Length: 407
Ligand SMILES: Cc1ncc(COP(=O)(O)O)c(C=O)c1O
Image 1 (cartoon, rainbow, N blue to C red):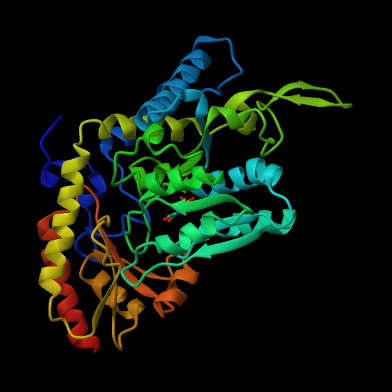
Image 2 (tube, rainbow, N blue to C red; image 1 turned 45 degrees about the horizontal axis):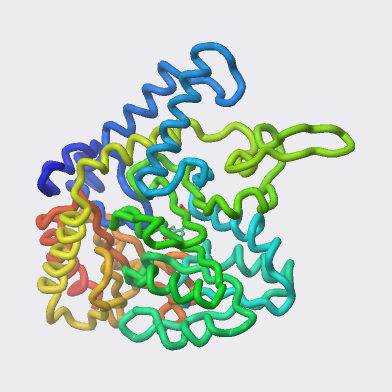
């Protein structure tokens, strides 16, 4: 394993050498999507140039090779998360995975009056699928609030978990807006004591933390490949094996069946039941390669590095008139969400873009959280393994200049 060096890591990401509006690109929108290392781009290109074939269907050599690569990708993901390959369902991403769990699992166990618990910091992808299933089953959604520092209100969450009607908790591991790292292992333990099943949205945790699902002991876990240096259009849903065969299929079609008759169809067992149709083989191979790439990165050092960037940014912005940071709890990932009194975030981002800097503004698909923060829209800079101290200097100096113009 290498020691951690963001300057050397960034050499692996070709897009970071380009300009943005004629200035060197400073990419600080990693919570929206990560850039891709050359090895991932090569793996996808190599698959299409050398091994392209549909999987599960052919007996010829080419198809067999594609099948092996697809299975290797599943094995890589499973090993990375410390679970078994037959607990990993390939999907299009976190959104599809959450919809799958809501429809295939939750819909079968929820009854009228049962309670689904969410938190105030959830992404729309971890709200809307539960509202849909609540409408279908008559279940009720209860929301655990957050405290002013952006951490979870554990007392209120405990009250909700101890409700006799509580059946399922779906919680983000890391907040895409606040950066808060939720204490998911303790929360899962508490939920299980109350016979509440736990779904974790890992979309923002896998790029920052080495996640061990056996250790967390959650029942379901999801993430999107594109936030983990892999291509768009691929992600996973992890489901503990004990649930898989009792879950309803998510979509019907080829590959998810055992026998099809016009009078009755029986379904495949295990993860295959949830992968109808031709999968995103190239995407899965890209995800497997991204994980292989990450094995050489020391995640503890990467976490320390991102915390150092956050610390430096806060230091450099000290005293900036009207600056409000959202999410100040100690245990947080490298996400800096902020507002400047009297300045619209969109204007900020537009002027920063002219300086080569890519940050995100808006509601970040978290409108309920925005309501809690008292803003319609905020600005967010989010770090990754390839961001450097220099990126922080450039961003902080540009932000100070831009605020002078706009305030
Ligand atoms: C916390 C969280 N959950 C879910 C999602 C949805 O991910 P995707 O759009 O890749 O399906 C995102 C994306 O930003 C996210 O940040």
